[in-house]
Length: 154
Image (cartoon, rainbow, N blue to C red):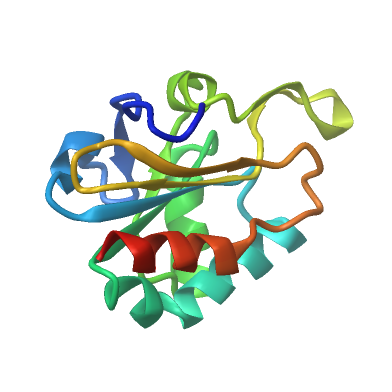
């Protein structure tokens, strides 16, 4: 997935069991955060830091969604426990993760088909303006670069 290309459409269930599509965000910037698994240390740290700085995203007319291959039920429990203030979407069928190139064929413990940690900034017209896919699940996205990209879009 490279910058300047059209972001792949997705339609995934959120924790309220409603479908959420990329096209729902037309007219605003969108930060998509793929993460390997709910309830793991680095994912919790990453998503809680986004929770705590959500105003920074909102100030640049940006919505944030987190996507993992966890079920909507698991993500619901995770969202509730961590009091996350943005939607978590279930890519249980692994289609969005693969479309965005954020996909491990085999992850830790021989788990097959897990999202890689990744950050994408999609502009109001659905074009990828920032793309970062991390090979190591222990690394965090460069949120400074994400915020700089968002600032440049306004």
